Amino acid sequence: AQKVTQAQTEISVVEKEDVTLDCVYETRDTTYYLFWYKQPPSGELVFLIRRNSFDEQNEISGRYSWNFQKSTSSFNFTITASQVVDSAVYFCALYGGTSYGKLTFGQGTILTVHP
Amino acid sequence: KAGVTQTPRYLIKTRGQQVTLSCSPISGHRSVSWYQQTPGQGLQFLFEYFSETQRNKGNFPGRFSGRQFSNSRSEMNVSTLELGDSALYLCASSLAGLADLNSYNEQFFGPGTRLTVL
Image 1 (tube, helix red, strand yellow):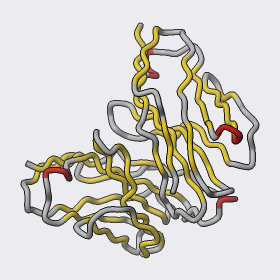
Image 2: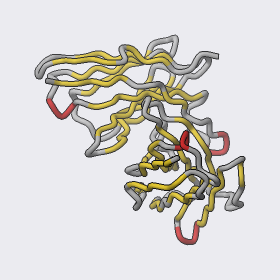
Image 3: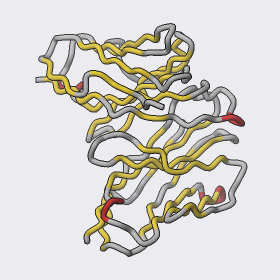
Image 4: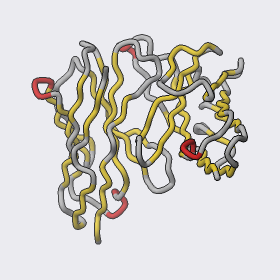
């Protein structure tokens, strides 16, 4: 069975602070993908980043960066210089094996960025 | 390019009724997945359709069903509604069927249908 855990239920920061969202996953698949999605109040899930299990290279994309470590089954996501528009619920998700179309989501982290 | 559309956006039903939700994927996408989102259970996978065939199903009772048409549009149906079925129902489409992890295609989500059961 697959499982994704986001231990942080809510995070509150002040604008321009950096914020890291934690994600820990469990899977028996040797090949899998990890994702971060953002859900603003409108409800639509917006794809942010993905990483496959073959590549542990960490990257930066604009204000977003991620830290993927297979040894600890973690896939943390950092927003640098947060902005009020970053306020949303963030979900970490896992796709693996032959789970046709099935993403396994964490419980989500509510991020509030105050001006 | 138009995104994933879902209709209706909001729906109010009473217990015991049935409901049908519709999802139109992005043009060219052949895979449609459905998810239920509730405050208590979070985002849970319902089922996935690819080329009119259900390939995967989550752990939901038989009251939840779906289908996909030849134009890739999909519908899901919930019969004998219960209070606990109140949720945001999201559908997502992708180019291929995620069968080959080496060529994974992201799922793009629609805005959802908010169902309230009274």
